[in-house]
Length: 342
View (tube, rainbow, N blue to C red):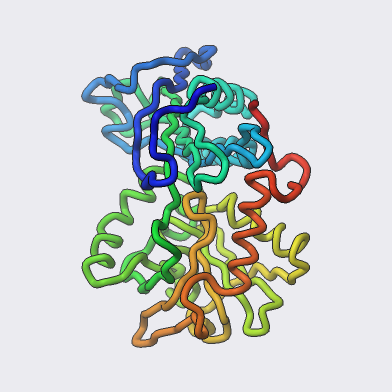
């Protein structure tokens, strides 16, 4: 198929409206069969549940053109699974994995011309989301919902090379103990906006959130999980907490480290005071895969993870190159990791 007339190699990471999107509605206790539509607009009653009580969840994943020309998605079954968990927590109807994947496939094929060519550094970013759609004035779950998926072609998250990030410990908590930190709900991101604007105003790239109970342990940033590399470069350490979002990228990097790079992986509580024990630090997420951290500042201290290198460190570079190689078909993927559409 002929590709859209876009400057693929110079795309930024922003919204470009494509031709089609997938929509299905939940009413009278069941989902309809879903459809592809060209209408990018949503019309809601002023009292819709999502507008009154923020009853909305979302996902994010990417679609790639592989080296041999196939159109694929990376581990979309895990996005479907995580969406189910988010819906259960917010008393929203669960969308089955089968319907999630079916809607995704219909969306991708309807927007095939927007899947960037291999080698351009661009991908098709996919945003599935669900929200309460009927009027709700009392504090209770909505009765009707809409699930949608749209696609937008994006370039690399970082243009012009990789720059190590400067982070600060936030004065705010990302999530309460036993709260919603482990699901992908819009409300979690809304509460982080003031914190990230404040961090940017003070010259930082992102916040680091500590555990809300003791404020002594590393959790994650506003939009990404974290991982650390031991001084000898042989071990990956992953912060462990019930209020951390289970990043699909981070979970995939754990497998890459163990099975492809023969590294030890330890998932445990990580104290802020032990950050000096690590040589590298990375932020894990769909957008940038893994981004290097240069410094973390907080509690009157500053920890550096650069050790003389200007971009990604050697271990984070290996993790990045291996995972992106798997995603684009240049390295053999573990069974079930790649969903092929064409």
